[in-house]
Length: 495
Image (cartoon, rainbow, N blue to C red):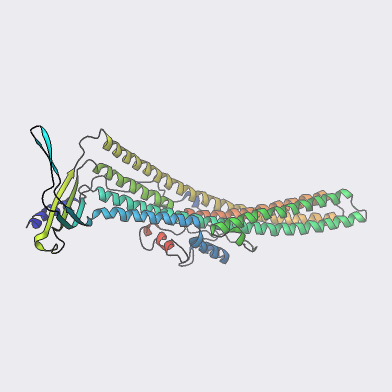
C-alpha cells in the first residue's frame, strides 16, 4: 500500500517535468534580399545542373575529376577529423538524454563482527570492559534507484542544446566536406591550366625556334645583322625559361591534390590533359533558399539554437533540485534463506536542495548565457551576409569574365594574325626583326591572358557552387540520410 501511495507523488513530479524555464527558440530574422543583384539581366551561356543523383562536380563532365572527388570521402584526413567531431557531439546527446531516466544499481555485502570493547567511567577512573557476546553475521543484497526529477526543464534544455550542437557539428562537417571538394576542384582546374600553359609554351618555343632559324639563314647570306640573331636567341631562351618554370607550379598542384585525396605525393601522379572549354554555371535559385543550402549558415543557426537552450539551463539553477531515491532487497544474518519474504527490506524517499544565497553567481551565469546567445545571433546574421556576398561576388565575376573572355578571344586572334603578317614582311625585308619580336611577345601575352580568364571563370563557377551549398540541404540535419551519416557509411571509411 505504501508503494501505491507514492504513485501520486511520482505522477505529479512527471507532470512538473513538462515545465521548462527559459525562452523557447525561434529563429531570429536575417537580412534576405528578394533577388541576387548581380544575376539581374545576366544570361549565362551554359547553365547546368548535376545529372540526376550525381554530385555537384559532375557538371564539369571530367571523369578524372569525378574519380578524385570520390576519394575525398574515403581518404581525406581533415574530413575524418570533422566526422569524428560529429560522432563525439552525437555521443554527448545520448549522455544528456540518459539524465531523463533513473540510475539503477546493485550492491551486495557480507559482514562478520562482534561487540566492541567499551570504556566505562566509575569513581573518576576509566575501566575497559572486555568484548561481550558471540560474533554475528550480516548479509545484504540490495537494488538501488535514484532519479533526478526534471522539474524545471534543466535536463530538457541541456538535451536541446546538445542536439543543436550535434546538428551544428553535422553542418560544419558538410561545410568541411564541401570545402575539401571545392579545393580539389580548384586545384584540378589550376593543374589543367598549367598543362595548357605548358602546351602553349611548347608551341611558342617551336615557333621561336623557327624564327631563329629564319634569322640565322638570313644572317648567313648577309641580309640581316648579327643583332637580329642575338635577339631571336634571347627571345627563345626566355620562352624556354617559362616552359621550365611552369613545371614548379604543376608539381605543387599535383602534390596538393594528393594530400586532399589522402595519398602521399610520392605515390600520386596525374597525366597531362587539356582543360575543358565549357564553363558550366549551377542554377542560382532564390536568395531565401541560401539559408538552408549553405552549411556554414546552417551551422551558425544551430549554434544559435544551442546558445538559446543554455539560457534555460542557467535559469533553472534558481529553482530547487528534487531527487527521488529508492532501495529494495534482502537483509539477514545468514546467506541461506536470505532471499525470502521475512528478510525483505525497502525504502523510498526524496531530497530537495535549493541555494538561498550565492552572491550573484546564478545571476552572472544567466547574463553570460544571454550574452552568448546575442553573440550567436550576430554571428548567424554575419554568416548570412557573408554567404550572400560570396554568391554576389561569384555572379559578378562570372558575368564580367564572360564578357572579357569574348573580347580577349578576339584579341588573341588579331595578335596571331599580326605575328603571321609581320613575319612575312620580315622575310620580305620590309620590317625590322624588332617588329616581329614585339608581335610575338604580344601574341604570347594575349594567349596567356586568355588562358588566365578561362581559369578564373572555372574557379569562379566552383566558388559559386560552394557558396550555394553544392546541393546540400539543411533539411537532412539529424536524419539518417544526412551528410554525416552518409559519410560514416562510406565504403573504405574507418570511423
